[in-house]
Image (cartoon, rainbow, N blue to C red; front, side, top):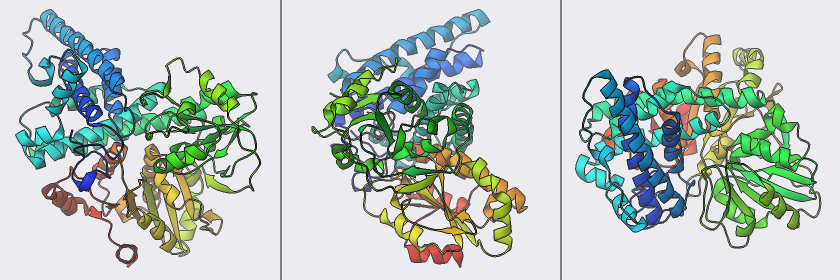
Length: 548
């Protein structure tokens, strides 16, 4: 195996014997092979689309294949083997569609090689060996580190976008042009000859398309559940039976709330599900009791202590402890060997039964709350007040401090930075990085809370909309605002958001706690020169540079 797609990758260069996320070499190799198969499908699907032919089954499979390989999603070898074999079947279907369409058009089909001509091994061991030949390390041997790193920058951006596209289509929001984008880019990445200039251009173009994908997901979430509203969320438990929901999927939470209504079970959110409390159509359920725990990396201790059932809806799962393995469940694309999986019918009866047979919380803990729900509608609803405060000199600067959290040392920087931000400044935050400081009391500036929780990682779209709207009010661009972005990254959804911000021309961003292993020095130098993208240093130095 060779994997360097997350921030915590071994020695900052790549995991080669076992993934820091918990995935085995076999799982890593099968995931790389699944991407190889997806490239083969897209090589045919892209050409068929150019002739006016498309297939939704093929489109959805490619999106799901990309999402399946995002960090902390699927750790199950057998499920990966099943997806690879299904992918080969769909690749053959895509080839047939393309060749038949060419015949009708009276033109000769291209003879495609590489991923399009892949022949699967007969056994799982054969597939694992084939996966070893298509790792990033194997690619670097052919293309060189810099080109392969840029190839992977684009690919990892596609993986993050695919996660958002999958969430959106589950709620009925799709755009055929987005499916065309995935096929076109995977076809591009399947080429043997790739140049640095072409790849840099594709990376920024992927960022452009990710904005469209985030727009779809925003429309899906707000169109289904309403625009988030500022809402206090209880972060201490109540007595009674309990289910904890982690991941990102709002639809799964809604279905569980429906199925548990009137059963005497309290539902708690975890990790990136915290923002769900701000949506009117979710918070109307009285048994949506609060949020439990913090970010994904602390789940083994937190889940061990949670006295109920646990449902993992998307990425974020870690190897379960034996103490709670019988009461943790997966659904959607998430899988861990030996953990009960809830299928597409979404019958959560096993989860409910596990909650009812678990002890639950013995007593109410003293109430403590935090505020969520500051999406773009809520923030822009107060834009007039914000502008007044800025013009009056009462609000000096905005900091966007957020992104993915992780366990690696150095992430206390974000807590220390939030604490050190002067009292005449406002902090916007999103994604699970907020757990580093979201339970601290930052107070307010003339009624405007100094900490505004914009939502999940995909709600970067809301943050961008807020920034662009404020830029219009102040008759400038985003780079002319008193706004600084200090981002933490962990996995591929953070990568696609970064590409989107770069596409929008956002400059002077700070990124940490370490730089991506796949972005090699020559490429980072270009990003520094063009966008002044820079690594975090110390809180004192960065604040001095930002505020002067």
